Length: 541
Image (tube, rainbow, N blue to C red; front, side, top):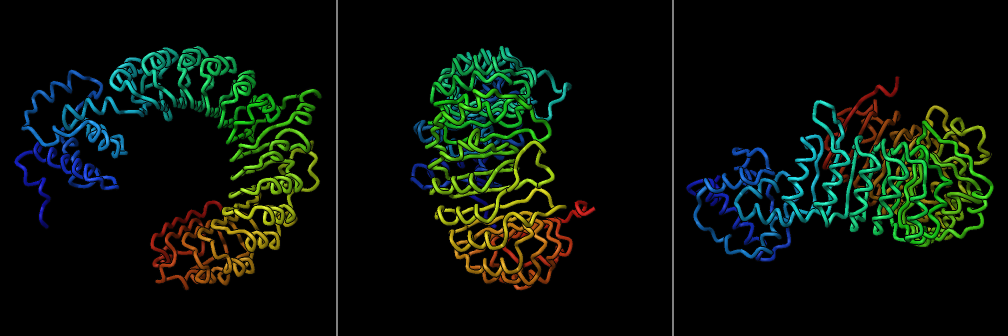
C-alpha cells in the first residue's frame, strides 16, 4: 500500500506540518465535515513518542520549541480564525493537548480559545495547579472538578481556597460542576457568589454544604438558570429556593437524594415556576425525611396558582403524590409538557394521568414505573393505582406520543390489576410510537406481538422479563415494518428458535441480548448488523 504524502517528508516536523496544512486546506475549502485526527497517520501521533510533563509549565514548553528548529510552513500564513476553526473540530481533550504542542503558534492560540476544563484527582497540589491552569486558559467558561475515586494518598482535594482562585481568575465562568468535592464548605460557595456570569451549577455529593451556603451563592449569581443538587445531605433550609423563585430566571432544577428536602418544599419556588422548563426531583428510597408541614403550607398548594406553562420535562422518582396539593398541582398545570418520567411515585392515580393527558397535547414521551402494593407505606391511602383508563386517556389526547416505557417494580409479585393488554394495545393503535419498552409487564403476550405488526412507526423495542411472550411471538419480528433496534433482557421463554427467521436477513441494525438463559451466542449470529450478547444468570438464583 502506498504511503501518504506526509510520510515522504524528511523528518517528523515536516511531516506534521504537512498534515496540519492538509487540515487547513480542508477547512478553507469549506468542506462540512470533521477531520479525523485520531487516524493512524494523525497529525498528533508524534506526540505519543515525545511526552512532555507539566503542560502548565510555560517555560519548559518554550524551551522545547526553542530547541525544535523548523522551516517556514504555509500554515504560518493562515489567519487565526482558520486555525481556531481547525482546533474547534478536535473533540478529544488528549488530541487537543497534543495539537497545542505541535508548534508554538498552536500552543498560544489554543490557550486563547480553550473554553472547557475538566480536572480531578491528578490536580496536585490542587490550588497551585488550578492557578496555573486558569492563567494558561484565561477564557474558560466551563469547569468540571470531579474527585470520583479519590483517596488520601492522591493528595489533598481542592478546598474553599481553590474556589476563591477560580472566582478571581475565571471572569467568564458560566458553568461549574463540583463532584465528590468533600472539602468544600459554605465559605467556598460564598466566594463563588462573585461569579456574576455563572448560569449553571452542579453539586454532586457535597456533604459539607448547607442551605445558607447555597443561599449566599444565589444572592450573588442572579443569572443562575440551571441548578443541580445531588446527594447534598445537609441541605435542609430552603430559603435559597424562595429567593430563586423571586428572581424568575431558573429554567432547570434538579434535586436528587437530598434527604432533608421534601416535596412540600417545592412550593417555595412560587412565581419561579413560570420560567421553569425542566424539573427533576428524586427522593432517597432508603431514607425519607418525614417533614411535618403545617396546615398553612398545605393550603398554599391548594390556593396558590402554580404557573407551569413552560414546563417541558418532568422527572419524579420515589415521590408521594397527594390529591389536590403538592406535585399533583404541578402535573395538572403543564400545558406544554413533552416528556414525563414517573418512577415509583406512591399515590399516583388515574385522575392525575387523565388530567395531565387532557392538557398536555404535545407530550412525546411517557415513562411509568409502578410500585408494588407491598412497597406502599401503610399510611398512604392508595386504594386504586393506575389502570387502563390512564393509558386510554393518553392515547386519545396525546397524538404526538413517540416513546412509551411501562415497568412494574416487583417481579416476584406481578400485578395483573393495573395495565392490561387492552390498554397497551390502545396506545399502540392510536399513537405513532417509535420506541416501546416493557419491563415486567406480564399482561403482554404473543397477541401483543401480533398487534405490533401494525405499528408502522415502531423502530425500537425493548422487552425485559416479559415471560408471557414465547418464541411464536418473537418469530413475528420480520413482519414489523420499521423495527431496527431490539433489546431482550432476562426473558425466560425466548430461545434460538425465536430468532431463526431473522438469521441472514440483517433486518435489524442492533440486537442486544442480556441474561436470557435459552438464547446462545451462536443463535444471535447473523441476526443483526451489530450484535451485543451477555449472559449472567446469577439473577435467577
